Image (spheres, rainbow, N blue to C red):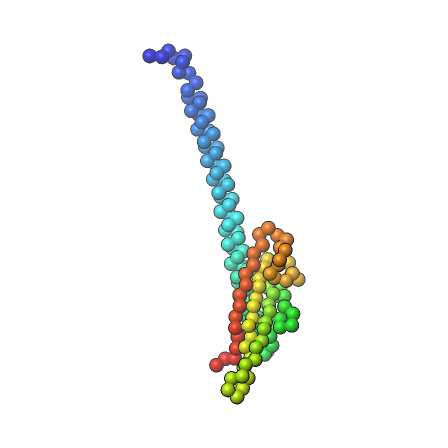
Amino acid sequence: MNPPSRRRGFALVTAIFLIVMLAALAAAIAYFSSIQQAGSELDLLGARAYHAAKTGIEWGSFRSLRNDSCPGAGAPTNLAMPAGSLATFTVTVTCVRGTFIEGASSVKIDRITANACNQPAGVQCPNAAPTIPDYVERSLSATVGPPW
C-alpha cells in the first residue's frame, strides 16, 4: 500500500479538470444561445418583410382595380410603412400593364411586384448595397385583371 504522502494532490487535479470542463461547457452554451437568438431575430425580420411586401401587393391591387391605374408603371413607387412593427421597412412597388384583345373588347392585366426591405425611407428595394448587417428583403408578385 502507498504511503499517504504519495496520494496527496489527486483531488486537486480532478477539481481543476472539472472546473475547466464546466467553463468550456458554459462558453459553448453561451455561444450557441447567441447564435440561436440571432437566427430567431432574422426569422422575425423575414416575416415582417413578407408582410410589408404583402401590403405593397394589396395597395397596388387596390389601385389597379379601383382606380384603373398601374402604380409604379413609369418609375417604381416607394411606400413608407406607418408606425408599428413594420415602420423600419420600405416597400418598392412596380407594375407592368398588358392590354389584350379578348373577343370584341380589350382587357388590361397588371403584373404588380412589391419588394420590401428594412432600409430607411427613400431607399429603393432591393438594395444592392445594404448598410445594415441584418438586412432582409422579400419580393412578391401578383397578376391582377378585371373581375370575371
